[in-house]
Amino acid sequence: MTPTEIMPGSMMDSSFYLQPTIDVAKLLIGKILVKKIDDSRYISALIVETEAYLDMDDPASHSANGVSNRNAAMFEAGGILYVYKIFGIHYCINIVTEPKNKGCAVLIRAAMPLDGLEIMKANRGIDDEKKLCRGPGNLARAYGFDLTDNCSSLLSDKLFILDNTVLKDELIHRSPRIGITKGVDLHYRFFLKGSEYVSYNKKHS
DNA sequence: TACTAGATTATCT
DNA sequence: GATAATCTAGTAT
Image (cartoon, rainbow, N blue to C red; front, side):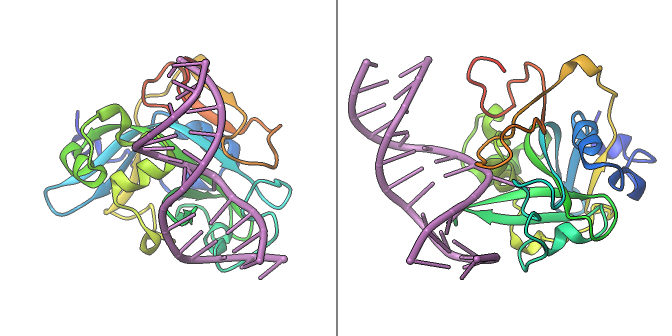
């Protein structure tokens, strides 16, 4: 099964992204992020780890202090990409959710590569499949995302999310978010239990 | 296996 | 001028 074979009718539409952010973060586990490179090549990977960042009431969210140049994409209507650079080195990929002016997004933290392995390996400079998209910075590099992809639509034929199978609830676990200093008591991280492709795999979670 | 340090820059105060 | 939703390599255990 490749994305091009299951593409018809299974691409997520705008209503999916307008749902509550935490719901979207959970529903994204098991879905496939597809980026088209050219007419015959594309990158795809099964999402195994996400984090929800909510509106002004979430102290860890970039939107906590209102609109700025950096986070403007978060305040657009759901269904676009919010890309930012962290520590001057890595890019992080978010999917904007909920209606316009809410300021919510879901961080894509890790995925299991399905197609375009050669492209990802070249982008990352490594060969280990399990590490290609493990961690938000690595995932962005494997896909070749950068600041020019900020605000890109997920409803285009070049970039979209495919529905896959519905995962059983017990396979999706949640935990505190990683790498933040505020809002650590909120369990807004979702991941596929036992997956070798999830970041922070210190034995188990 | 576990912890620490260093890289490096856009963005916001 | 300080900070940051990270990653990797290196050293210690």
